[in-house]
Length: 636
Image (cartoon, rainbow, N blue to C red):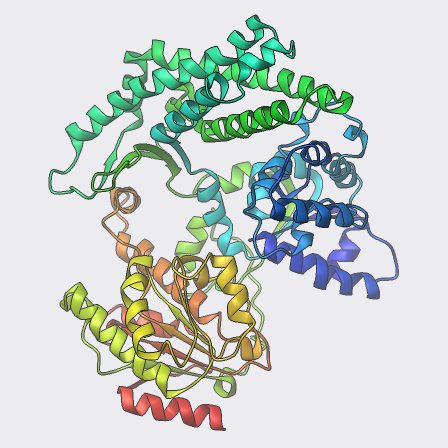
């Protein structure tokens, strides 16, 4: 309510962590708000262009032979287009959007539109832009906020960051870029085969029917040939650097850091190659726009047959893939590398034991310190950060550093709405070995055995959180063998995609979900949708990756203990995210189990324990006593 009244005086931008939460704000909170306020507000929901349908591309897709499934999707889209006012394809609520039809019709931004198209004036993204300019309240997500801050900000605009604890994560994710030398080669090879084929319809046939001239054909193919050839020369240069600087003991997955100064030296020494690729990329973008406009006109006039249409659509799909793969090429700009000397980490990765492994050059910002304040907060008149655990004493210094806040910032804390003493029980399994003192094989055996006993003891909807997909792959077959006939077990990376198994989990009773990564956060399963959360080990990040070594080294250089000021707070927040999956409403009831004895036998364990909210008492029990308590709790 206060936000609504504030929006009558100043524009309000509300940003949340994900598009899913963004949709929840619009569908639930904003809908309720509109029912109670005595005045009208213009509210717009903004997302990245890829979420929207490009009507012109959809129209073109109707002229192309499609699979039976794609044709059914097109029919669904035709009906939906009669109803939608936003063009946001998430409104379709499809289980998956992996069909190739979506790659054909997704929006690539207003700049990529054909101004001569009959649909240009009614384009959904153009409509959204008009609505944005006249909106009182803008709902968006952190990724969109960070990449469009200049457009969203203003001296008369208030910024409210919901789920602010994720803002820095989104910042680092948005600023993580990769150049995959092998993928660029694969796509450019595929493009050349498609254009020059002697066995099927090719661009020579487009010349024969006078759709393009021979000179235009040469102009189109030359930049792709340049990229295809020169990218392998660069790959050889970077591979030589990797082989010369790698740890000889690391023969599986190799990571080698490159100092920005060294990278600048490599670029200067091979400037001719970099300039050739850069010029080819510029020409490719320019020619793509001209070719797309020519194609759109030909579709409308019915000049092309099915073979020509199929060829051009295959070509455009591959070309978009190539341009997307090379989006990060600008990160090799010499001036940019000089500006980012102190804030950016660069490294090479190569999986030596993987057949046809890819060599990748990676870039990432190490943290949000000295960035968010200058480049985000100062763009708005007022900034309000909202989120769980922002000022939790165990992680406060870490969180303030990550969010680029000073110690003078005003803090307001609100009481918890849950009665944890009645709604939940939390346990630590007592009779387990110290994870760090046993082999991986022994760990898998003990973990599978204890999980089996817990899961056979009850039929509660259970989420089991892991730190890696590798451990899930080892534990899953053992659990299936023992209890797969009694309960359905869903496993990330094995039984389906994250979204698919989330939806399957929510549709049943007594299911078991083995998850990592995304399942620690952002999954909302109220009431009987989730009754037990089991955390297999304390969620510390691996200290051995070159990225984490660089992050820890940066703090150590400042005289700051990297374990207590980075590794530990991150693990505490991650554990709280996992715990937070269990109780989502005042009606929820559930059990939390931690299978890691380090929380009781390591000095830092007390910080994990004290991070749990009031009313939560972590009880240490042996497995048999734990099983009795679980049964007793749910029988109450």
